[in-house]
Length: 140
Image (cartoon, rainbow, N blue to C red; front, side, top):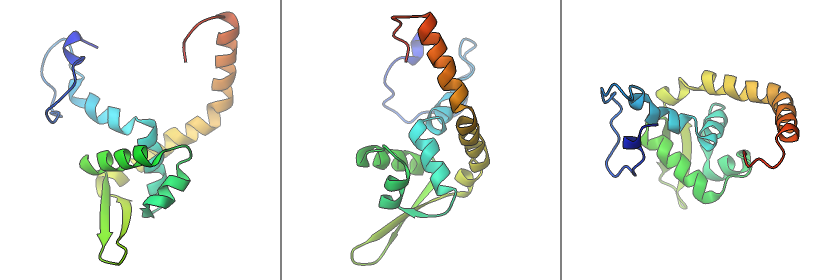
Protein backbone atom coordinates (compact mmCIF):
# COMPACT_ATOMS: atom_id res chain seq x y z
CA UNK A 1 0.00 0.00 0.00
CA UNK A 2 1.39 3.39 -0.88
CA UNK A 3 1.65 6.24 1.61
CA UNK A 4 -0.87 8.20 -0.44
CA UNK A 5 -3.62 5.69 0.46
CA UNK A 6 -3.37 5.85 4.25
CA UNK A 7 -5.64 8.83 4.91
CA UNK A 8 -9.32 8.74 5.76
CA UNK A 9 -11.53 9.24 2.73
CA UNK A 10 -14.06 12.02 3.23
CA UNK A 11 -15.43 12.15 -0.30
CA UNK A 12 -17.08 9.36 -2.27
CA UNK A 13 -14.48 7.02 -3.69
CA UNK A 14 -13.96 6.92 -7.41
CA UNK A 15 -14.15 3.41 -8.80
CA UNK A 16 -12.10 4.19 -11.90
CA UNK A 17 -8.38 3.51 -11.66
CA UNK A 18 -6.53 6.66 -10.73
CA UNK A 19 -3.94 5.99 -13.43
CA UNK A 20 -0.90 6.37 -11.20
CA UNK A 21 1.80 3.87 -12.06
CA UNK A 22 2.67 3.15 -8.42
CA UNK A 23 -0.84 1.87 -7.52
CA UNK A 24 -2.79 0.60 -10.55
CA UNK A 25 -5.12 -1.46 -8.34
CA UNK A 26 -6.75 1.51 -6.61
CA UNK A 27 -9.79 1.33 -8.89
CA UNK A 28 -10.81 -2.11 -7.66
CA UNK A 29 -9.67 -1.90 -4.05
CA UNK A 30 -12.82 -0.13 -2.87
CA UNK A 31 -15.14 -2.77 -4.34
CA UNK A 32 -13.03 -5.68 -3.10
CA UNK A 33 -12.89 -4.16 0.38
CA UNK A 34 -16.69 -4.25 0.50
CA UNK A 35 -17.36 -7.68 -0.91
CA UNK A 36 -14.37 -9.16 0.88
CA UNK A 37 -15.53 -7.99 4.29
CA UNK A 38 -16.49 -10.99 6.42
CA UNK A 39 -19.92 -9.64 7.36
CA UNK A 40 -20.75 -8.68 3.78
CA UNK A 41 -19.87 -12.16 2.57
CA UNK A 42 -22.11 -13.77 5.19
CA UNK A 43 -25.01 -11.40 4.47
CA UNK A 44 -24.71 -12.03 0.72
CA UNK A 45 -24.64 -15.80 1.32
CA UNK A 46 -27.79 -15.53 3.44
CA UNK A 47 -29.62 -13.27 0.98
CA UNK A 48 -28.78 -15.66 -1.86
CA UNK A 49 -31.59 -17.80 -0.45
CA UNK A 50 -34.13 -15.01 -0.93
CA UNK A 51 -35.40 -11.90 0.84
CA UNK A 52 -34.92 -11.66 4.60
CA UNK A 53 -36.16 -9.35 7.28
CA UNK A 54 -33.60 -7.69 9.53
CA UNK A 55 -34.09 -10.03 12.51
CA UNK A 56 -33.95 -13.07 10.24
CA UNK A 57 -30.61 -11.86 8.92
CA UNK A 58 -29.35 -11.16 12.41
CA UNK A 59 -30.26 -14.67 13.59
CA UNK A 60 -28.74 -16.26 10.48
CA UNK A 61 -25.45 -14.36 10.60
CA UNK A 62 -24.08 -15.70 13.85
CA UNK A 63 -22.11 -13.25 15.96
CA UNK A 64 -23.07 -10.05 14.16
CA UNK A 65 -24.28 -7.18 16.32
CA UNK A 66 -27.33 -5.11 15.43
CA UNK A 67 -25.12 -2.10 14.72
CA UNK A 68 -22.73 -4.05 12.47
CA UNK A 69 -25.60 -5.63 10.54
CA UNK A 70 -27.15 -2.19 10.06
CA UNK A 71 -23.85 -0.81 8.74
CA UNK A 72 -23.29 -3.83 6.53
CA UNK A 73 -26.70 -3.76 4.82
CA UNK A 74 -26.49 0.02 4.39
CA UNK A 75 -23.09 -0.29 2.76
CA UNK A 76 -24.28 -3.09 0.51
CA UNK A 77 -27.36 -1.03 -0.37
CA UNK A 78 -25.18 2.00 -1.15
CA UNK A 79 -23.02 -0.15 -3.43
CA UNK A 80 -26.11 -1.38 -5.30
CA UNK A 81 -25.83 -4.98 -4.10
CA UNK A 82 -28.80 -5.05 -1.73
CA UNK A 83 -32.28 -3.58 -2.09
CA UNK A 84 -34.09 -2.45 1.07
CA UNK A 85 -37.88 -2.47 0.72
CA UNK A 86 -40.18 -0.81 3.26
CA UNK A 87 -43.78 -2.02 3.18
CA UNK A 88 -46.57 0.39 4.21
CA UNK A 89 -47.84 -1.62 7.15
CA UNK A 90 -48.23 -0.83 10.84
CA UNK A 91 -45.67 -1.43 12.11
CA UNK A 92 -43.62 -0.96 8.96
CA UNK A 93 -42.08 -4.12 7.57
CA UNK A 94 -38.68 -4.02 5.91
CA UNK A 95 -36.93 -6.69 3.93
CA UNK A 96 -33.60 -6.98 2.21
CA UNK A 97 -32.88 -8.78 -1.04
CA UNK A 98 -30.03 -8.94 -3.50
CA UNK A 99 -30.18 -6.74 -6.57
CA UNK A 100 -29.24 -8.15 -9.96
CA UNK A 101 -25.68 -6.99 -9.37
CA UNK A 102 -25.63 -8.58 -5.91
CA UNK A 103 -27.11 -11.82 -7.25
CA UNK A 104 -24.27 -11.92 -9.78
CA UNK A 105 -21.88 -12.29 -6.84
CA UNK A 106 -23.61 -15.23 -5.20
CA UNK A 107 -21.84 -18.02 -7.08
CA UNK A 108 -18.46 -16.44 -6.29
CA UNK A 109 -19.24 -15.80 -2.63
CA UNK A 110 -20.83 -19.23 -2.24
CA UNK A 111 -17.74 -20.86 -3.75
CA UNK A 112 -15.58 -18.97 -1.24
CA UNK A 113 -17.86 -20.03 1.63
CA UNK A 114 -17.84 -23.66 0.45
CA UNK A 115 -14.04 -23.59 0.14
CA UNK A 116 -13.81 -22.16 3.67
CA UNK A 117 -15.98 -24.94 5.08
CA UNK A 118 -14.08 -27.65 3.21
CA UNK A 119 -10.65 -26.38 4.27
CA UNK A 120 -11.25 -25.02 7.76
CA UNK A 121 -9.66 -28.09 9.35
CA UNK A 122 -6.52 -27.80 7.22
CA UNK A 123 -6.28 -24.06 7.97
CA UNK A 124 -6.72 -24.69 11.70
CA UNK A 125 -3.99 -27.35 11.65
CA UNK A 126 -1.65 -25.07 9.69
CA UNK A 127 -2.21 -22.34 12.30
CA UNK A 128 -1.47 -24.74 15.15
CA UNK A 129 1.70 -25.90 13.42
CA UNK A 130 2.81 -22.31 12.83
CA UNK A 131 2.08 -21.39 16.46
CA UNK A 132 4.18 -24.37 17.65
CA UNK A 133 7.15 -23.43 15.49
CA UNK A 134 6.88 -19.68 16.20
CA UNK A 135 6.15 -19.43 19.93
CA UNK A 136 5.43 -15.97 21.26
CA UNK A 137 4.41 -14.47 17.92
CA UNK A 138 1.55 -11.98 17.79
CA UNK A 139 0.08 -12.87 14.40
CA UNK A 140 -3.68 -13.45 14.48
